[in-house]
Image 1 (cartoon, rainbow, N blue to C red):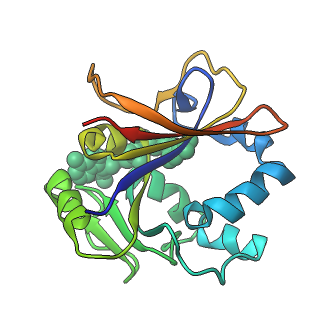
Image 2: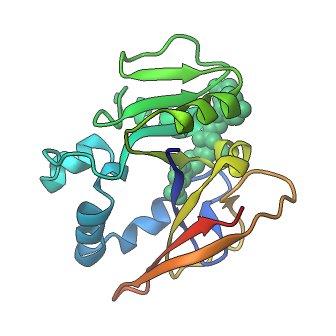
Length: 194
Ligand SMILES: NC(=O)c1ccc[n+]([C@@H]2O[C@H](COP(=O)([O-])OP(=O)(O)OC[C@H]3O[C@@H](n4cnc5c(N)ncnc54)[C@H](OP(=O)(O)O)[C@@H]3O)[C@@H](O)[C@H]2O)c1
């Protein structure tokens, strides 16, 4: 069974961005130490153009070979003219309204998102599945998440977009590791308690 891992950046109060999802206030924590960590430990979660800028675009995928994201998150790349933001992975975009895919590497999931993700998880062999977000799609897939990698930054939003756009839905996770960084960022990895 392949794991579905939600790798997400969030504030101390659990928001992935402001109320519209804008996460740019967190970019200030992407300093040399933290960026080196991402390049070394989570390179597949970096968009292809960022991998190129960091000189890690030649790396073989080790942890993930597939990404799932919502249309609103994908649209951030589309607005920059990038139609395949994670070209080093198989890309799936959840959207009922986008219609045809704008890039051959990107498959649109319009129906039965949970069923499609279950089928991806059940594929033989291969690497894990990176759930990129955003909030709505993470909420829809909460029950399927096997691992949470929370990059939390020492910043309070007060109000914002929650990590999971869902109603009350208690799920237990167990802490597997914690990494600390000089700028106050923490990366906590949790496994799912089933
Ligand atoms: N901090 C972080 O690490 C992080 C990571 C990722 C994203 N973000 C932020 O999150 C924001 C976007 O989050 P969001 O919650 O607004 O949107 P989202 O989850 O990225 O995308 C929502 C869209 O996905 C589609 N969708 C949702 N559920 C579906 C289902 N069951 N079946 C098929 N399609 C489905 C719909 O697209 P259609 O309307 O086309 O049908 C929906 O409008 C962005 O602003 C981004 O900055 C932050």
